Length: 306
Image 1 (cartoon, rainbow, N blue to C red):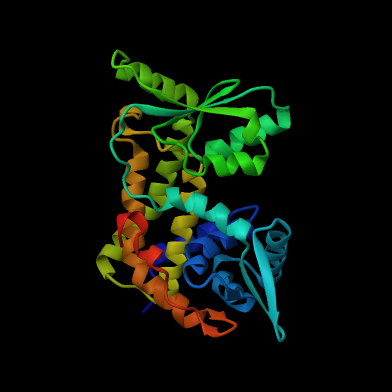
Image 2 (cartoon, helix red, strand yellow):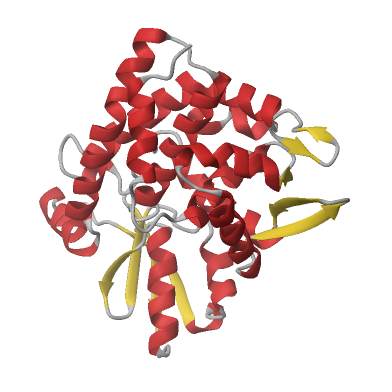
């Protein structure tokens, strides 16, 4: 079966990016695929899988080496082959992101907030805290206060301890008063979260992947390698936007929020290519014991159930 033009366009667009960031794509492959299949894979399998993305062997080896240095990956040598897996730290980092990447549509908001107040932190620690909590969906209200709608404690305490600031911040619960107007809340959201920037990025993402969705709807099934490539780029590009997003409830967002449309698109494509992508992984990637094992049960729970 020939490759769909829409799939080739995705690969060409990625390969044309400068700089071409192999490390980030490798983290996506480990998080989306390898972590669900035993968390170990031969380096040669990664090289073969990523060459169609425009990454040559040298670039991939360099990126993997950097990920080892940064604590994301660890290596095991068997004979002349090197096998890589997420470290405990790397797996924990990705699982924290995965809770947002593969989440189903959020539940209705109850008006609650998680409030983080930090006192006299050094500038570097304060900036790191803001950056890490932004990845968890927190908005910056003022110099010392960050806010997350509803229960924003998923990954919060772990992050505070990892940054060494757990004893320097106060975590509180708050509840929106009934007299608060929806318009005022939306203005607060626009001022505290980068919604316009996010909308622009979501729109570009939708324009890139809608042709793939339409093509998949016409042909039904695609070759295993194509399925893996589509799923990997889908999660990779979505992850880059989503980890800047806020997970704000509908009451705080503009009407017909493009982020909600993007979630529907991602869920649909992920389900359409899931079987072919899994076939590629099981047929083409190797561990020290042989082919990758079957996926963990957690894989089937992504996006509310595959």
